[in-house]
Length: 454
Image 1 (cartoon, rainbow, N blue to C red):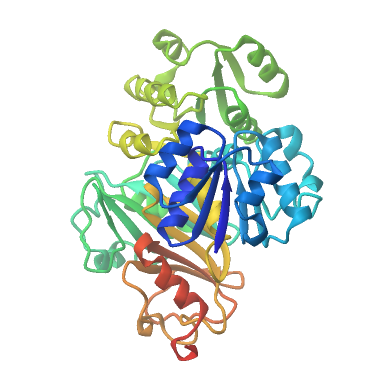
Image 2: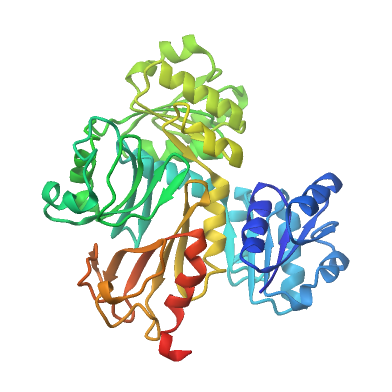
């Protein structure tokens, strides 16, 4: 597959690196000379310096032979023009664009099915805001992801010494949770990533990713030592698009929301558009302000300013001052891997969310969604089982599934289930699969065709 990536910022670079590592034919267009040099030294891709909206540059990149264009520059206009050119002059099967300006995203007719011929519009800020909202609703969670329209939940939890499961093997959890509608699909232990089997023993400090159904979440949280009540006091630092979106949604559910924003003009705007939230003009690094506003009583503290270094420092300060759970918006890969080890409870990365959204168009098979977990070490693939697939028609225990991958959930119509060895997947079932990066090619093969089809 030939993929043209326009814009080599954090999202564009990550996508180019990921696709190149999987053997795809990648061409990157980037206008910044210094950045072009860095990419040439770091990645095995073709790099062209120039404007991604230039017909000449797109022609040089091989637009006529491309299978996909991914336009993710910092300019919405450049991204749209690049896709317009690709749509009017070529027949590229897939076109993906990043547009962040609400003035554009409000006009859906411009995008899907419109003159730009866009297959998918990425809005990293919106994806990050939605992810944070889901996490806020589950006390003690480090991540929450929905599959099959919410019928299946993925919940991230860090295992503390207070949990009764520490020292237990996974196969022994049935005694503690007899209904067995829960599955630990992956474990992060230091720098090690584990797709576990029943013999794995849980340790204090493990970062677990657990698959379950919505009604089981309270029991799951209690089982893994997360007994804090679902508090409704939220403090947000940063009143930009993400902060205002989160506040607007929470106040509709009667959460008690305070928003701290240091730009006075933005504060005036927030006071007009938010009906119940308390808007405070100030600096999130001001300890006295945080104390005066009751930081010690806050159930969830969220830092979503435009400066990720500030988000990290502010979150650490809030945690030190008594906030029960802190969430920081962080995008630099080197920060994402560090922050959780120094006291920040939850890290949300718009970059990783965007990468997962794009990968669903790269993966082979009937893919519904792709989610990348902590530092992209694991992919969660939601797919529809095909009649020709190697995973249908027999009990899961008889499937020679690739090492480093596990089937985490199955939806048969409206019935969601956590599978066991006797579960049989039928054509048309929705299946949620966890896989290490090294296992992805073999998982794709299993999803496409039975062995006898070769």
